[in-house]
Amino acid sequence: MSKVKVAINGYGTIGKRVADAVTMQDDMKIVGVSKTRPNYEAFVAHDRGYDVYTPMDKLESMKKAGIPAAGSIEDMIEKADLIIDCTPGGVGEKNKALYEKAGVKAIWQGGEDHELAGFSFNSQANYSEALGRDFVRVVSCNTTGLCRVIYPLDQEYGVKKVRVTLMRRAADPNDIKTGPINAIIPNPVKLPSHHGPDVKSVMPNINITSTAVKLPTTLMHLHTLNIELEKDCTSNEIKELFSKQSRIRFVGQGISSTAEIMELAKDIGRPRGDMWENCIWDESISMYEGELYFFQAIHQESDVIPENIDAIRAMMELESDGSKSIKKTNKAMGI
Ligand code: NAD
Image (cartoon, rainbow, N blue to C red):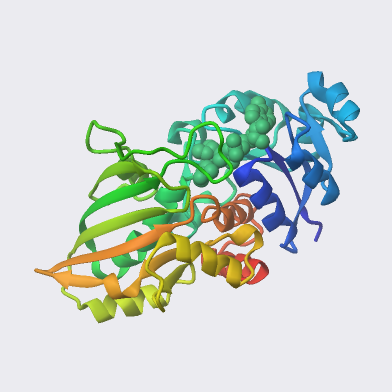
């Protein structure tokens, strides 16, 4: 069977990671990536063998900078079966008309509203509902991290109520425009935060409320979760349930911070030092007065990458069984 042709519109933090993850699969391939400027990322994309496309009015400046652009973004879209839109939040919305005109499928990221695609995706929670869809939104890094723990808990014990505080990194490590900050910012001040409703875009039945603050770090988000379950259980049973989830990793072994998790990712040879799994401190998993508590850390730049791969497979109907797609993606990426 011929490989599904995927193009990346917006080769930045998320786009370059999705491109490399697609390349690792045997049922899909990259036919182009787009860059709006001839910066170092454009050179790396070119060196990696990706065809680099650019807006029509930038073709000349790309060429002058030494990058032989393969054509315009519209040309790239024509070549693809499916576009992964990884442009900055709010920009992706403007591209919808282009995708509709070309008759290609598209995946947007968590910076866009649910309504843009009309369907919000998490591999474990709703893979089968994405089968054959034209438009899908892969939810944000925080929402992905929350779905990965709430879904199996709901399946096994029934989730009565989730309360979560998100301690968010202020900016990505390469971000020289917005961070780091020297402050703790309640964000948003108006409570509850939008993160709870975003989980409901994937699992509408979940009672969840969230608060969020921004912290002076670029290394991961950290969640404090407090969950009431329908059925009684012990902390050991929760540990056992989480230990069976392939995109959850327990951290302990002297790891007491997000900085050490990022070092671990480099030590185990992860590309770009990425940590694709939720990192839960198994020692933190506690039942107190019948409620579950734990800490998890989420690598904002990379946890959504395997989910994008599964979303492609569902939309292109390459695999009808979500658990098989998850297994295939994990194996190819080394999760
Ligand atoms: P980014 O700024 O790192 O990359 C965006 C890329 O798109 C850049 O290369 C930029 O030059 C390019 N671009 C801008 N306008 C464009 C246009 N009109 N056409 C084509 N390319 C254009 O952004 P990012 O962090 O990768 O975020 C992308 C999406 O992923 C957003 O929706 C964001 O909310 C979501 N997301 C980001 C993170 C994260 O922590 N970085 C995590 C999960 C989801």
